[in-house]
Image 1 (cartoon, helix red, strand yellow):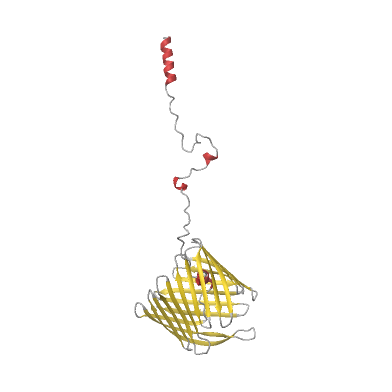
Image 2 (cartoon, rainbow, N blue to C red; image 1 turned 90 degrees about the vertical axis):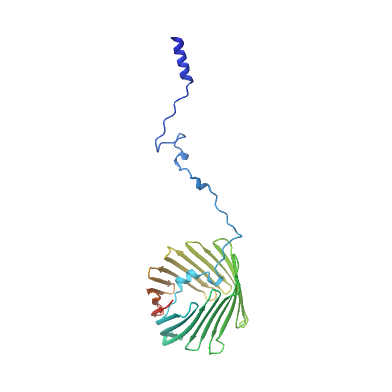
Length: 339
């Protein structure tokens, strides 16, 4: 009996221990309730490294003259005074005729602080030819002015732009030739105009979100030259720009995209020569059937512009601008027919 009991005791000591019971959900881990036990474990996908920026494959920046296009959309709407009616008729897929009538008032410069306005009316006839590689736009007004615009794609990267304004008055006609070159991550432009005007600008993408550029110009008739620098930083939610010129101009703008339909914009401009400082705040609100834009600036001017779509190809326009310090009030309404 003694030998049997000792054998059973030896067998029990040699047997493996029973498995530990499973921990209930939410129980403390076996290594204790320390910081490592409290923090959630990282999923496998979070171990991926951040993608490196490929500086040899940066996006192409916006044109030099359009770096503030989002801010101008909110802060510089096409305000008008009086009655306006625009009609566009498509004759073919590429050719269209347009008619525009404007009846309002014209401000006359005076030495007094009061604003002097005289009634005026204007009719404008236009012709448009639109092609993927060629664009021709002409406007002829009742006062004898002729405006023409030409855009021709010479190659996939090189384009020619011509802007001209011809008048019956001497020394008031203007013309400008622009040669635009679009690279993979940069843009360059060369300008030639009347009065011995020569200009050039260049803008380069530095990072996927930042682009920087410079410009120079020479006005031979007035013996003036200048140089300027700009930068633009944009993301999916905001756009910020900075411009500095040797003419004494410093301009900043910022646009915040609150949502796909709402944008807020502000700008600041300082003129070192005249010591003038102006700033403004504006908004751009796109609804289902209309678009509302407006601004308020530091000079006390309040403006609003409404475009409401009544039907397919028919839009109703409302424009208002109130200048409280100068007691200058402008109101207008109009309609555009045709696409």
